[in-house]
Length: 311
Image (cartoon, rainbow, N blue to C red; front, side, top):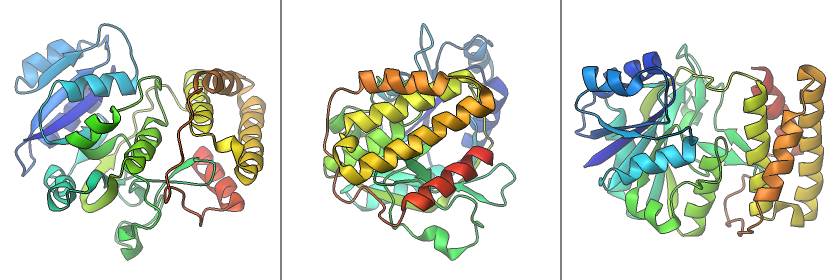
């Protein structure tokens, strides 16, 4: 059995479209909707329109990691697909994203191919990180028909919003880190899976459209705070700043991000988030060998940050 866990928070129309596409899948699966204390009658509407879905309710807004973990715990499938409510899947999505896990017992996670909302460019096919563990969506902006999209070099793991995991692998590493409310939880999980010996894989034929929900609002204080929090948390959790080259690159990049946020939004949420995240990330774990894409230098890091920020 394959469990498809869909976290949601006040996004009924997006969720409805997501669940309609899941009804069209070629592979048998169980849908588990993990509702993060929505106030838009999501739970009642699910019972009315999607009675086949298992619904897991949070009593208060807990964030992505806790909500997804609750959804995973409600299932029993050997394969767990995590899918954001703002993703519309093609009919073979579940079938294709599960294939690498069935074919190779060493694979612990699988990245899908997500396209941007208009379907003409790639949103991501998983994540890659630089030496500071700053994450970037792989093949962002490329044409979907470009053969290079199938390249898996530098793949760290899937994005949390369109991923497949082996349940045994999740259980071995403890699932998503529930200290992280939002952003960066997929990077952290991918690092721990790799360190535990589980390989990542990609499924370029598992295609979804990422509509983009902007739960927190683009560049809103809440979004900026949580992004800053998770960034600093990961930096400290993995001891990134103990390495001289990573230290200088991280300081320059993070200072630049904070300065841009202060100049454009006149809000210090990003700085406050980084301070809080640094304080929380007291435990140090090793950076697994092979996790960093060494082709992403400092200049490339800055270019990508500008592109994603402005795009």
